[in-house]
Image (cartoon, rainbow, N blue to C red):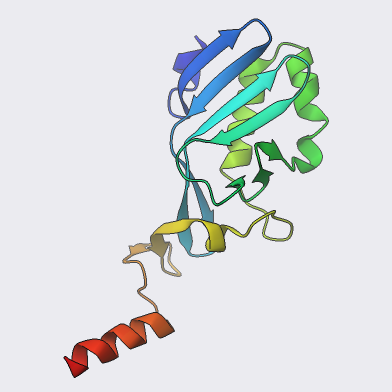
Length: 153
């Protein structure tokens, strides 16, 4: 039942004597006009209330996510709610909350900025239509140098 309820969010669940583990589908974060590829995670809900987030595919140094450093998250207002859910046996709710956490970004207080640590894979215009990456009026210094190199031969 758990797997059918979360199949669009998680690929696999593992139940052990002291923990529940969920392995996520690919996590993306939308920030401003871009969609960033963050990675696939192993989320561990230990029955002692400890929650771990391991990025298995796309870490930025020691950062698993903009709000996760070395598997430990800055959970903000969720830091008291999640352990209570685990103690109560609400693993489905806990995993759903963890997935929502991974898909969101608070620009005011990250461990690592999403646009510095992870790659944008999509871009959107002001009408929320997908446009090719880099389709803005501004060009980067690197793009200008590449264009100069092409012209010079």
